[in-house]
Image (cartoon, rainbow, N blue to C red; front, side, top):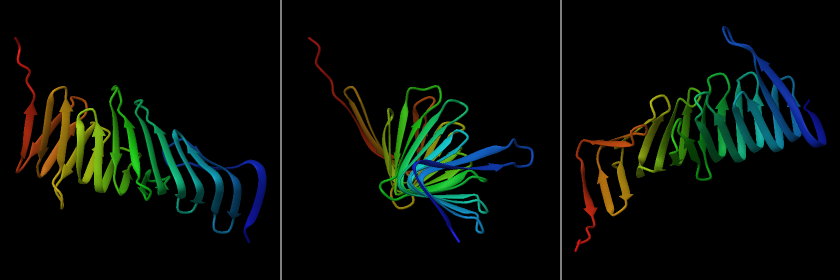
Length: 225
């Protein structure tokens, strides 16, 4: 039988986990309405649902947490915030998401999902858009699939897939169906290139294109008198 609690103030439930060789870390769940199935170890929070685990925060209209599977399922106005030890900040939004608290990986999809990535030691902010995102190993990397669009100070990149690595601040795209394409503007310069493979190095703001590269570069000149 599911026990139900109704209160006007947010409800809170705390789970504690201890892994071999790791310090104990709490998962704190709050919301307006909480349903608990003790036998199945499942907690469902509806209305202003929020999960806090270390530096990670997940917010959604409905959050389901399975203690046995270490699984968080979020639906409706999902927001994911993460502050890394190196100072990098990540904000992700979607209509649905799943996250495994033990493996520190997950998936975002629905509602035009996007990730906003504030790169460490940089004023640059990278905006990623795709149909689906896969988050790997505590945000060490993110994979974007289908209708990928990436916007940064280096330009706008489009393709059908991308992989962002946090460890070395790089992005890699390759041709699956659509060839990666970059469009860049700088003062009076305009460039548009596409290739089978594309690398973007955020630290040096350098783009490398490889295999069947083609494109155009336009520069407006003003006559000096």
